Length: 122
Image (cartoon, rainbow, N blue to C red; front, side, top):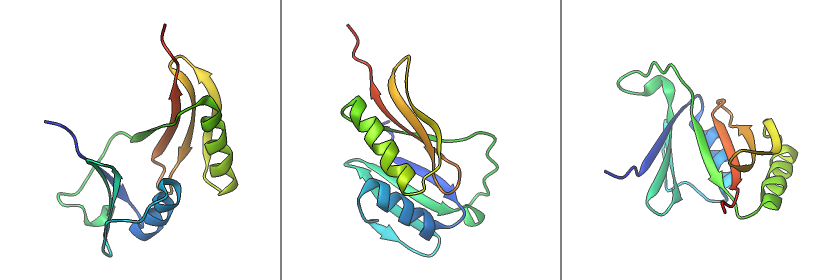
């Protein structure tokens, strides 16, 4: 099996669609009142489902973090600055940690978005 779909439970699919459309730079491939779907990349879909209508009802104990790789350390810093200027909450400013350069932001529902450039291993 190969995962091909990420599903986020959200309060307002239209607001989340605007947020993800803006940061991903693309339009949804499907949208209704309670559900919006994006192609995150070929072979991987991102669904945004109004959490009050999820069947069966979801009672989630943990959180979600989406990893978004970029090409360079400078891209990490550039994206962080761009998102901060757009009002996206940055909960971890750009820094170098064990696996590379990274920052963490939050979507409108508090899901974590980690932008990163892995360190080159020798």
